[in-house]
Amino acid sequence: MNDGAWRPISDAAKATLEDLDAVMVDVMRVIRERVPEYAYVPDDELRASSTRNIRSLLQALMERRQLGPSELDFFAHTVEDRARRGVPIDEYLSAVLAAEAEMWEQVWRRAEKVPEGRRAEALNLRFANVNAVTRATVSAHRRIEVVTALEDQERRAIALRALVRGGLEPQDVREHAARLGLAPDRPYWVVRARARGGMDSDQLPRVLAPGSGHAPHAAFVLWGEDTVGLLRDRPAPSSGLIAGVAGPVALSQLARAHEQAALVFDTAWKLGVEGCSDVISLGLCPAVNAMSDVGDGLRERYLAPLFATGHLGEELLTTVRAFLEAGSRRDVAAARLHVHHNTIGYRVNRFVELTGADLTDLTTLAELHWLFTDLDLRPQRQGDFPSQVRS
Image (cartoon, rainbow, N blue to C red; front, side, top):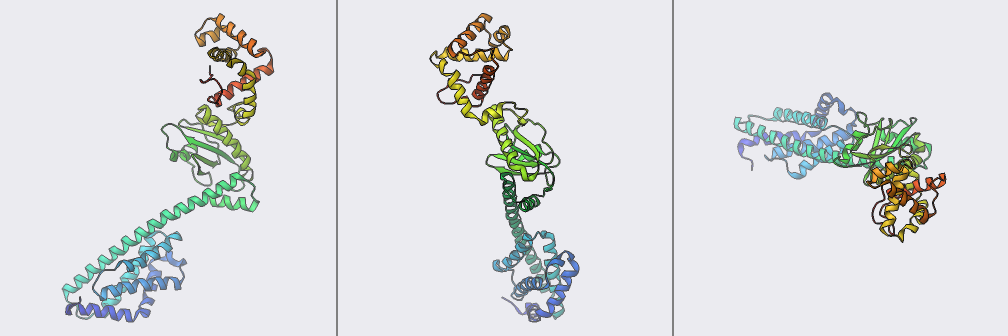
């Protein structure tokens, strides 16, 4: 309710509202002068949003009240639009406060004989509304920042996945590279990694690309449980993670490199090899991992004859592996397994009798090495010996 002492302020607000078109000329000038960053906002758009907000402030002042929720929504909608365009919140608030200050200048020019107590009340109402606008706009801006960040993250994820899947036209490659901030003409390493132990998956990009985990040096995306990245520099080995690395290759050739990095990662993960591995550092293991059918055939060839002997078969296989890894030296294998060297000889001979293997034949040795690696990668395959056969 307005009493007689408030009437000079109410009448001044009403007069300002009735002369709003002329008032907005000064408001627009002040915004342009005090917030030069708003130069990109067209006059029609800026005038429309500013007029709407000034009208709300004048209406509330005339009625001697604070802004209501629907009126605060006007400010929030405007800042949401600005936020989607990348306008910082401080620039938006600077424009709002500049317009609000000019509005009050216009009101006071039209006010006559305002009692001192009512002038103070008007100032308190002014500050209350400014605080309400600030809270509403900051909250809206933060909300849009979160949404925009998630949308940008998703767009980057789509771009990176498209690059590593391949089959793109050159123009598409360049567009996706631009979205990721990558240099289209540079080669990149492909890495697929997963945190291990106490490392958080959020730390992986910083560990894999220390000091340069941003474009144009690197781009990362979550891919299921893994992190897939494109890096300008080869990642250094590090504990706390397992990673497969391939490259460097051109962006148009990422598909094959990612397949290789994924295979290396899967192999290293099964073997528990920490750090950054590639097809060279893991030797024959990625090939064994990729061709399980070969492993199945070798298990049938060498393990099936041992099954009938039960636990002895496991001992024979473990002994033969230790013997071969010791360079076919009985004494070294015996020390490793804590048995007599004659026991080593007996078990090796028994293995040869059951399987028909020739431990002096290079092909047989290669097959056994493949078999042992396959057992390391797939230790719990149904139908095999129940325990892992490792030396």
